[in-house]
Image 1 (cartoon, rainbow, N blue to C red):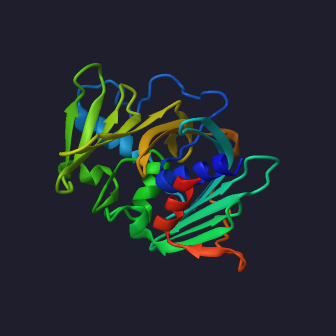
Image 2 (cartoon, rainbow, N blue to C red; image 1 turned 90 degrees about the vertical axis):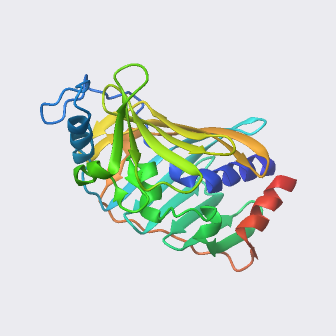
Length: 283
C-alpha cells in the first residue's frame, strides 16, 4: 500500500501541471464556431484569433477528480486540484473516503510536498521541479487549463499571431501553432483539431525522446473549452510512468475563495525534492 501511494505522489510531482477537467458525460456541442468563423475554415489566422479570444479571464479554479497511473502496476487515487491565477497550483491526494494522504503546492518560486505515508516533507525551489526550464506558474496553469502559451508572453492571444507560425496539419482539417520564442535544442508547438480544440502540446528535443501531452473529451464552460482527459508518458528517475487524469466536470468551480494549506508537520523529516524522489525509487 505504501509503495503504491508513494508512486502516485511521485508521478504527481513530475506532472503536476498536466491536469484537466473531465465530464462524466461529454458536453461537446457540435462543430465549434467562433464569431461566425467555421471550425474547419481554411483561414488559419481567423481560426487562431477566434480560438484564443474565446478563453475567458479567471481568478481561481477548483475541481475534484481521479488519476490513473501505470508504473509497473495499475494504480489510482482521487485528487482535488485548486489554483489561484498567477500564484499557485495545489493538489491533494485522497485515495479513500476523502482522507488526505499527501499534498503538493507549487507557487511562483517554491514547491512544497507533504507525504503523510512516508512522514516526510519537501520545501524546495521551483527550478528543481521544472528542471531549470523557464516555466512560470502561469504557464503551468495554462497546461492545466488546456490553453496555448508562449514562454515570454504567457497565454496566447490574438495580438500574438504575428509571433506564432500557423500551419495546416499534415492530414485532416486540423492546424498547428508554433510560438517563435523557442528554447535552444527544444521545439514546442500546439496541435488543434478540425474543431479548433487544443489536442496536443508537443515538445521535441533535438536529442532524445519527444514528449507529448494529449488532450481529449472536451466540454464547454463559460471560461472556455476544457479538455476532459489528459494523458502523458514520462520517465521518473529511469522508471517509465504513463498516466491519465480525469475530473468530474460537475465539480469545477471558478472564482470562489481558495485556501492552499502548505503547513507541514513538525514531526516529519524534511528532504529535498531530489532526495524525495530517491526515497520513492528505493521503495
